[in-house]
Image (cartoon, rainbow, N blue to C red; front, side):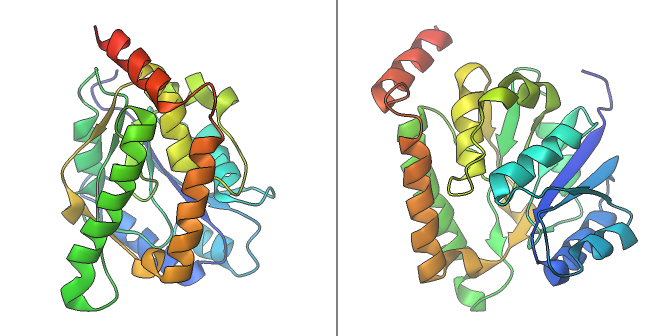
Length: 244
């Protein structure tokens, strides 16, 4: 890998112009700037695309509805050696890009993910709610995968790792793209959970009851989409054998 790998930041967006503007402002203040920022306009009806262009981002249009297709379009368009992913309502701290790229300086690691804190909602509950949400996700995903999961609001991976699994990822809008990607990358690539939740702030709208129920349903659907060939006992057996 080059000493200073090029970095592409990918942001899927659909009708999120206001939070996207704040996200792009935070990315402009990074200590280690991105080499390119790709905003994937997933058929927005607002001015998300215009906001992105005004901020100097490269806009990629994806007419196929859903985050899986939009994220894949962004990864395909990325030119960097490393691809960093966050969402339109994410607010990265100034050291976020440097933190994620440093974690991938280990050649044995091909993908990393980290936590976050909420930037809205009751102030006293922001950290514990974020911890509970991500803790629940990890507790659900780890046994199904046999290894660490990925979380789309704060993750990074090598472009060559993406290219190696590109033809196998699901583009179903009713599945979680990050969990699905973790299923495929985890086969032959090492995924690592890193510290640094203070590097990312996200919206608490994820934990609103109706949205959380929908998210959980999609998580179950993503797991079942890989069965029966990817049932947990088989994945764990393969992972243990691979490590040996």
